[in-house]
Image (cartoon, rainbow, N blue to C red):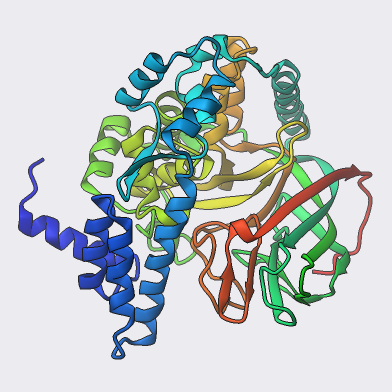
Length: 492
């Protein structure tokens, strides 16, 4: 489709409004310079705009974020060409300089021109294997995933069998004791300043219950309500010169395996005017109804009218067409679903937002869900989704697991791969810690400074005064232990 310059300008202006940018002149100039790779000049344009005394507080905040965003991009694209080649030589058997140059020319790596130098994203080596699986045969240190894949298959089968036998959607509860430790580096904040830390904790769900704080050091200042869309515990501690500032929270909760046995012909269209569902049908930041998404939706869904089959077509398309890749920071991306659609790769959250966008566009309520995947051997921060199918209600859908099953679970048979893929459409394993049920939400109480991740919340958020502590200023870890399931008092 041909777009006129006038229409393109209008789209850019709408994009600024959608992302909260109220100073489009300074921003458009900085964006142009950034896209040309002139980061220093882009930063100068923003700094000049910030020096204006007439800026409203909201405008100043937006421009400060845009200035910080440039630095975040630099941190993501941390490899020089030589550094990437050296890392690849340690990973790929018989890699030559000529082959490396060929891969660059083919666009196999995410790279950007930054102030006259071609820079490469830090996860380039891992992403190479995700996107070009034939290279696994040349991997100098291959990973044996046989046990992990078998364990996932066994868990999937156990949950489904229990759900069918008990005629329930939530089965086989497990009790987890988690310890999250977040540590600000020494001198990340000046001596004596109060460092505030928001740590993610389990929110209340039909399949995640009985949350209980066991200990907190320092003591929690606030714990969000159980039904908060983004749930956190707030802790505070003074910084001490030359010493790290640590926050430690130990808690327990119960998680159920989920399996919805759906009869597609029983699924009915939802009432789009239902106030409980309407918010999950609208376009929003990172889930925008662009012309390109409309076109993709038509290609995938066709003339299908059944909500189950429409959603399953979108899920299967993502499993077949999108490759996994570690992501650059979400806060640096303007439209995540469009990024994933265009690149044809993404991480779990990017895949989730593409699925959410396609579902909403097709009249299927869909929303974000995220926290941690704590499956033994695969613990990491993780994002997925929920969709609403009448009369069944809300159910989890994990687009990443569909991709993993079909592309990366290579020890499974094709039948087993499809079995795992289909389970995670309306199913979920127990090894999850779910803190969030929507994306791009505000912390409570809100930070005084900008967020390190303004889309998701899994690694914690830190600040002192009005100053954000970005991810390079602190470390985080989640220790997970399964404990016996028994009756527990619920304190939140």
